[in-house]
Length: 426
Ligand code: UDP
Image (cartoon, rainbow, N blue to C red; front, side):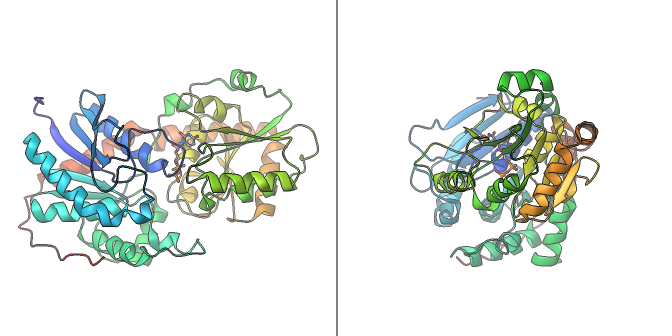
């Protein structure tokens, strides 16, 4: 295939395939981010190749998203789902597959944007082969923060922390998606390295496209009912338990008017099934089965109606580097109650577009949710302010312009005579 003289960029996302179904197992915000950045950059004149790992022999090697944006799946390790904490050993194979692909296709990329620490390692290895290469990196999650919020530290933690420090110090540019993430990098990882803050974005037209009354009708929500919505993966760090316990404490619990929708997750038998079973167990134990509904994974087409129909969207994560669900709900004009952590402190303006509550504190979540549900006019004001905030701060095209500017700056710089980078110990 012959491509025009568009500038070429590789987005690397080893474990987050930008072309697959989102909202189950480990597929979430990173997959959406890479796909949306890729498509937006293509609209801004780039030729975009997004590289990920092939997890099934049935998956096509190439998926075209638009004439100038495609996903390329490389073979690295077994062609099956492997949890991200077990992927490090397959990365050298990924690097080799990338280099062979370049050679076969007679292509080279002057710039790569890597996503998550696994891909950052791949990027640093590629730089050893291509000293001209510029590397931009987005963490999506920082081990140094994450490991504070989980009870069991995985074996890979030491390697991850070392790689995360190395990439911060060596990347041509780091993209932090919120000021809070930048602060964490500085206080917990390293004082060295250059960081730009460019948030994640969302498709404000798509998520704001559905009328609230029509959405409620379509989902069978009566005008006097109150709908609380969770959207996301089933992962203990998402804090769904806190939400369920908060609903149990709500002053509206026995009103006959309260509904809780917990959306996301796969069918039984997948890696996120255990958390879903656990949450369903808590729902049953608290006697909330009658008011709780699990619609399962929602497609991108279904999501706007759910966000628009909800009276409040809740993001109860223990740790959230950015949290795309928050800005998607806000784009639909729905206020968000979120944990007072990470990116949620950036996207939610308390008392203006939603409320923040301490993570794991179901009593505080119950108070915040009830404040919004019992004051419908205030709820609408918060929702309108939320919609406005997303439009001005978090539209994908606005974000793509900022990334575009960043890449252009890096490519204009004279190519540094780069020394070989010391290897990272596994
Ligand atoms: N999502 C989806 N369908 C679902 C549940 C989630 O498409 O049933 C999407 C959601 O719209 C969002 C992403 O998955 O774009 C989750 O991203 P977020 O940053 O909120 O969380 P992460 O999964 O990265 O922890």
